[in-house]
Image (cartoon, rainbow, N blue to C red; front, side, top):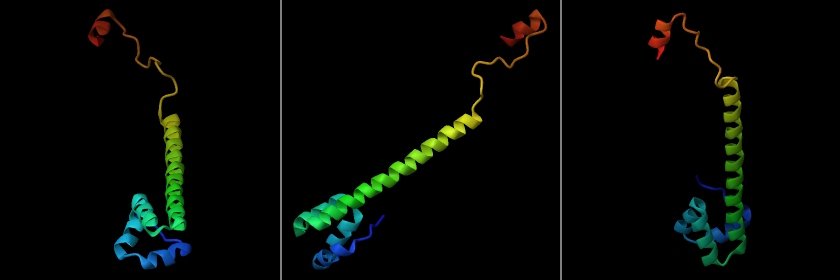
Length: 99
């Protein structure tokens, strides 16, 4: 997933190669490496901010899916655990056959 580049970092990215621009857009490690090579703290801050934002989105989505799972479990799982739903055997022969 390619990230959007903030306007403050555009001048920095215009002076680096296209390969470096792709590295910034593709991964946090590539972005930090380019920021270190270009000696740009604003680009490094932007890369870190984008990474943390992505983690925030994943956390919210994961929490929502977890809550959905809990709700589905409450709705679909039986209310009484261990409740005997089988009818008692009418004779000793039926009881022996059930084993």
